[in-house]
Image 1 (tube, one colour):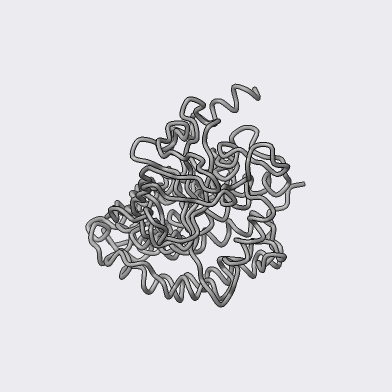
Image 2 (image 1 turned 45 degrees about the vertical axis):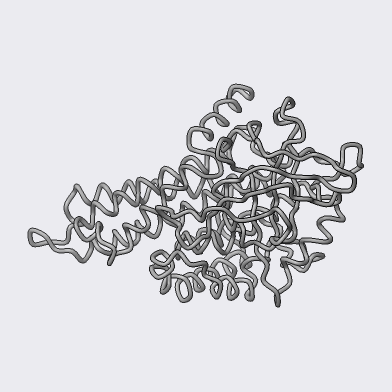
Length: 393
């Protein structure tokens, strides 16, 4: 029998994240959306209470909670508070996911503890996307060539969360373009002041504006050989860069879905409360079928999205993996639900939903990116269709 009851530990961490989102995040969400500043103080507070490190192994100084569902619960709550601030807090998980997925033991021993130090907040960035290469990693144009004890990197990265301000950047580059995916490797740049490494244009975004997004410029950037993630071909622990990227995205897509769910839930709850209080034609608008049915659809889609997300987390926890594209299913559906729910919330509020004094227009702007990053909705459908074609029913 399937049990949907959360454990005591899961409930406690979820409640901690919700309280943090309610008391620390929501009161400043509009400010950071308006200014596009990085919420450093919020990041520090989240780090201090363990919201950024609870899922990493205890041997590295983390909380040792090796449970994907707990991670998804925390992400949903923080995104319920503010999606942009959630990205700022959890943006570090992308490079850390890369190190955990493909790093050698020596690399994990060196880098993960630094990010788990409760007295020293470090943030990371993951440089995969380029001006001409988004979902198609095999089209990466950034190059790496071996020169003695270093790799020399050249290229441009686009739309990089924490790009240029992070303490550690994981950058994907190709050693041999003729090999496509097979020629891709990942490199760790541990000093943002490395010669030749610089931040390009900072992007002004439609949504999730509390997170810093920028270009990365690499001009003859020297990276020590030992900073090639996964080691060298022939090493006992060697992990190819392309395989590492796939493992990383498989790990992170359910989390992206959980963030989308948090936005959808925030918009639904606000619209529901408004519909109970707003009087038109002598009664609350929730008593009008047109509004009531819209809210019913919103509630149903949100619950369905959560079930897909939890299933993806359960499959990861059991080590089963996503044989039918279950991670992509969760990400695809939750992204669409976030967009649909926020637009419906605006419609329920009418003119009030369209002005900045009310938060629903922000939630709609935030929601759109969840149909785009970590693989567009179209890419998710491609992943799913290929998986079901291979697996059958």
